[in-house]
Image (cartoon, rainbow, N blue to C red; front, side, top):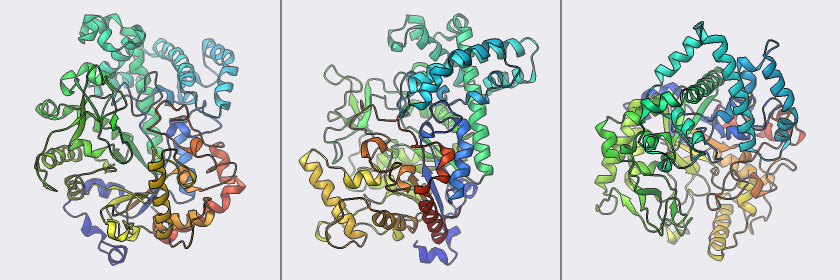
Length: 583
């Protein structure tokens, strides 16, 4: 249904009878504008060198000032000792690195203990150095916070456990309500520390085989500490969500499809995973060697025998924090590229050529009954398990049955403007799809967190001749699609940026959610000058130290007053109003 048809008051007809209708009515069926901002990248006067849960309400207030009513964040699950948000110790647990220390009762106020005072005094220079870094130093900040939280935990136990205070009762209630996953996670994390972060497959027999009762007794204090930091994280993120919601801003979370092999989930529930395989992606135009993510695919048959309780519990916990959630690599619910683990191709080796689709489907053309049945079953299970609205990340080579099922269920897919093109129509130079004709139930965007920013894409030059030729052709075609005449500009100009934003804001998609850096184009000294530094992640270069470590160029509090950005705020606010994306 096009913009003109929707103007005639037929929006509600789109949602009648959809399995997702309850979620739609909760978030609203009107057009909205949002931004993608990794929580870690928020720079503020009060945080410790990485964005934390305490930053979200202030960021929401800033976003609301120029018409933004959705904040999308990347995964914030416990990354262990790593820095990659799509690789975590748990599909449930939040990373303690995002806990706001100034929101922990035992660490603030005039009545804090001498031990707390001494810790902060002794570490003042350490945290000052971490804060002033141009890139996030995740491990240093994590270490600092965990040391502080251990002191807080000791104070909390000393003040509350014996007298069974209301706080202690709340802590005990949290543990009971989340017993399905919390104890396994906290014990797993304690054992990881105990065994110097070795793979759980190398642990002693009783630990490797999850002999819970004995292990819990031997590691009681560390396990209790793990539960405590999850309680703090839960409270802070829930409070942040509620404050954002009161401001009129929805939070969109990100649930990675697969979980890390080195996770509490695989250790505690090995029957739910095909541990002899690695999930990944087949070779395509973006990755000629394919991808091997090193993570085990699901054993859906065993999960179904247990009524998908692991997935249902995961979604229900996330519902505390998010209004909308992104289903990462949604096509993996229909069929997953699976690579057998061999000596030549061990877990996580980059190349993913030697794989196969699981399950297999020998249907012809668009008729893929096996894939459709599995995808529809799993997505229906997710929809019925949560009040959150799902959005399916359906980029890449996607079978027809995937997008058809998303449409049938009322789940938006992605429309990345620079890739929305009819790649099959060679006769007409593979024309771009007109944004005004995107499906209403879809999410338009400019780029993704795994790609360049818009200015970065425009000026980057690939060293691979084949990729360079394809990229240059795409940019030239896109320039003409925007109405540009003659040779496309070499620089990413304000005029070019405004043309792209006008197309996106006036798209027919109910949601427009753009990466934060893409909103501003080139703002000298701030955004758009260095493609490598502005980019969130480069999946083709996993060892790149710039991946996931970016920060806002200045503190969040200073953004509304920055002279370079003031006119850009006005332009965006006007677009929000003109396009009816007030939210």
